Image (cartoon, rainbow, N blue to C red):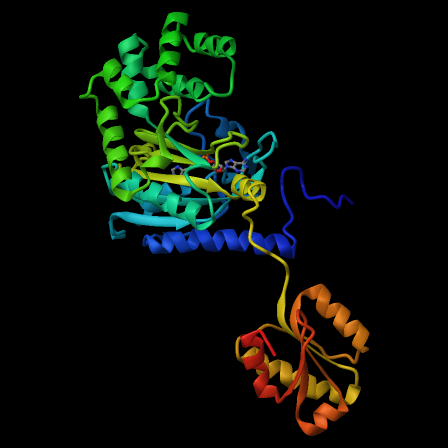
Length: 428
Ligand code: HAM
């Protein structure tokens, strides 16, 4: 019997759960501040939801199987198709703009590396029903607020932003056939990861000649809007949208977090406009999050399109980064009070005290079996009890307790109803 979880998956011990819940609460808090509503969907979906376009890495990484009813199903590798399915099924009942978030667990049969596992939790925030980059600007503002809340700054992180329409115009002007667009995006997405020879080779495999590929690579290296204007003219939709997004970023006050990077296209085929990824500036880690606009996903499912955009933000890389920067919260296990007794006759008294304190919303570990003082105080230390209330026949007869504050060692004698004030005051 193997004691390790399946490769690429994680067990969450109680300390790990504290950290996970801390992260999820921060995500939920930001979502709520911006009035995004939480939704969920089954982790198991119809496989056809993901078998979109050939060439996407995500499709080759599916955890798929045939169930006992002969249905082809898959563990979701991402949430966007489930969300699109729900939006389509919800139809006109749903009030637009639809502003929803979720924190699903996603499964991808990936090569496991630092920051990439075979399951991860992913904060998804999406908007349906807003055509302009005002939606993207709000999503980015949420991200900046989240990063700021956990102690990260624009010195630590960089939002690398582009627009897929840029590549569309580019391939047209270079003379690459329009129907090559998806293939070009998939190779272009690897610009940062592969050396030039391999890239040229991959481009040639999809019918892009060396001179054409060289031109594409030159675009990938541009890093100002002026350069793009020179190459494509100021009238291009891509440039206008980028310009508006950068202007809105200034209005929101997070302009310094963004930089233009035409090499960003993202590996998923459904993006149609703005695309972005957030990286640590030291580039020691994989992308922290990524997203963009996908205005035509619903029609690929047979429905009527609604303009949409959103992002996915995994739990793995951000926790690595916060750990590297020493920004993780204290996730020591703790409990407000430990109640114990050394005398079998006082068990009822101890249980009663524990119940009274719990009624006031405080957490209590009640050791109802009689124990020696040494055991109780050692245990209090190990479980992180802030206070200990250890009772015996004398206390029971007098209707009082002796309360010890573990951090200072101070002791105080009080009645059971007074315990709560001491614990809340955190001093004797
Ligand atoms: P994605 O770029 O494939 O986009 O994933 C988004 C984020 O999920 C990544 O930036 C990373 O934080 C995390 N992530 C992805 N794969 C793994 C993995 N194997 N291990 C750990 N973390 C991972 C999407 O999934 C899009 N559906 C996002 C989206 C939502 N676009 C619009 N709305």
